[in-house]
Length: 475
Image (cartoon, rainbow, N blue to C red; front, side, top):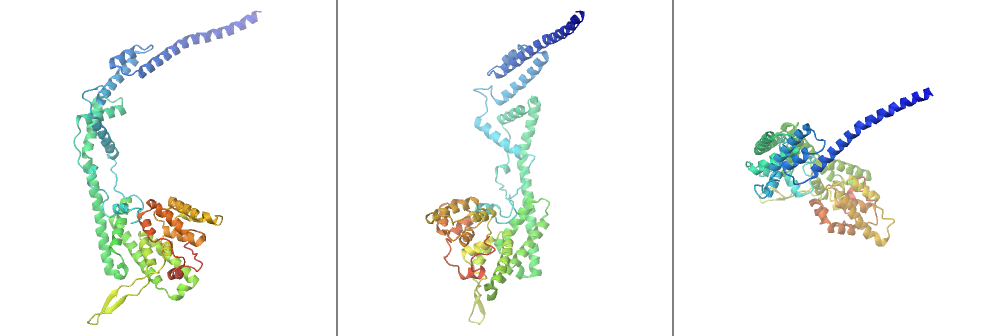
């Protein structure tokens, strides 16, 4: 019996200790909960004056002297921010909303630019003429691409008091623990940098322009020296348009790669010009190949491989269209006549070309992009009923417009499909493209004027492609 009473005393003591701990903890939790609820209620009340906010805050159950001091400091800073923001100046002294909005926009532009002066770069690769539209081609011409009349180059005016107050308000909103003098100092520094930014931009523009001019001078001198050393046979085909494209590509290189010196850039593009002209001369040789080479199938295939190599050289210079024109041109000898003194006078310079059809020339000059190659593989007219062929061809045109790139050719795609899909309705395909030509580049729009191909291949195509119509360049 005594043993039983002893055990009961142990559990009794444990229960008594737990009860005592709960008795001490529960009131603290209740007090903390009342404090949190009171502070939340104050934060949700709108339209209170600073004194009313302080009175509500100080009378909150459970508030401590330390909390009252911290809260007073926060209320003080909030009142200052509200004053600069103009929320407590209804009816008088508030900044003009339109002016404030414009200032906010200007400040955002300034913050994005200050400390991170952007380089004047023509985005994209360094090819000289791979642009989709004429405006983009013009914008990528040689010379600094920035317009000195842009807003960022025009000197700024000093801030108005409203603009300065708006900036101080923004600073204090972003950094609540800053004092008014500290926020005012930061705002003064912002104004100074804002006013000096046009000078920084102008220095940048001058640097880019001088760097490009230096590279162009070096390129001109190197080309002049090369003319004397290597003769007109090498550089005779560098037209004025090609020279402009060379300088454009060189300036793009300088903008994209800051480690490239003007001399290195000039040397790089001089060598590219030499390679381009040599390739162009070899194309002329291929255009004048013997009749035997034009008829033998293996010789035709070898010639097409050589032309595909030349195409890469032309594409590197952005001269696919020039290559296309050579493939289309007839191969004609120069025509001379004699004047009254018996001297030979050039009447027609003649031309070196392949006499290919628009579709045949495009097939060589404009390789299909991977997405279009896949589209051709997936196209199947075999299971399409006769009355649905026109609609299926129009759908193919729709898919072409969605998947094409700026480098793709309408003529090349249509020719590739026509030579592999015997039921292809080329007329319906081109009619759909004409109805939706707003999705085309300027060069692609020019292709529409050529229209559909002839029913039978011309002599130029027969001399280039196998009799079956399929070749290594159709894929």
